[in-house]
Image (cartoon, rainbow, N blue to C red; front, side):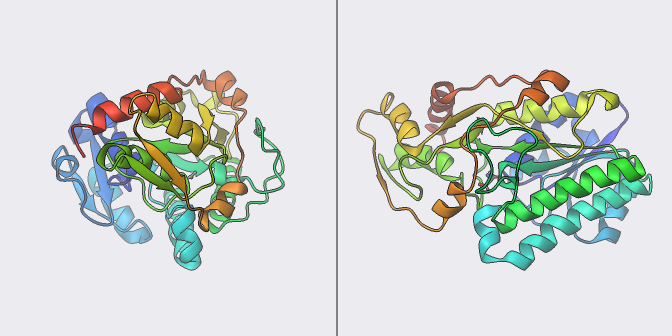
Length: 315
Ligand code: AKB
């Protein structure tokens, strides 16, 4: 394989696992990891690493020319909870990085882009259960507005300039290698850490708040799968709905109690409750199933078992 791939935001929750998986698949020297700051030592030493501010077009262009990059995975973003605190910073980061990679593809300096969208594109007027691919959106969060605008721009660049950009609306992602940062679904990772270290967790969402979630291995598999699909088989050029499981804080707590019977949970909802209330409970991903054979492998029970097994040697 002679292509070179750039990952922007490689030290984040998804970027870390994506970097390892792509390095395994294509060879370390072909995967250029980048981030605005240094992160995990092991990741930085496992192949080429660049400090890169992807809001800076010239800096990004320079890295792309230097390594002869053809594909970019743009994983840098400010997530829902932090974006409510810093709306303009979130808008600038989430939109300028996207425009920079879209324009590089328009200028034929790269050939393919992966850009993550989110269930946050949906809003309070969206049907909550089995949310369809195409439906009312009207996001009510800063992050959701940036992701929905991003989707419109992706489709525009595809239609107008033939830019091959592919995207998934990720649900909340659960992983043990890297912590998420600044999201509303982060509770579903924190809870495992606290179960092992303290035997108890205070959840910032109410007990019956049901949200779509996915284990990281499934998310990475989906990402590689959509990127490997022949160009003419990608029918959604905004972003694909993607589902795996849905659960409430009470249900994830019960799945932990099945393994750690003494684990306890209590609830102290904060501003993130309102964000969660505006999002779907479950997702209809039949288009992803039809167009590129998507099928999730992890349910809640398997996720809990895998999380606790891997984290018990780390925390
Ligand atoms: C968040 O909670 O902000 C993210 C997301 C659902 O996109 N995990």
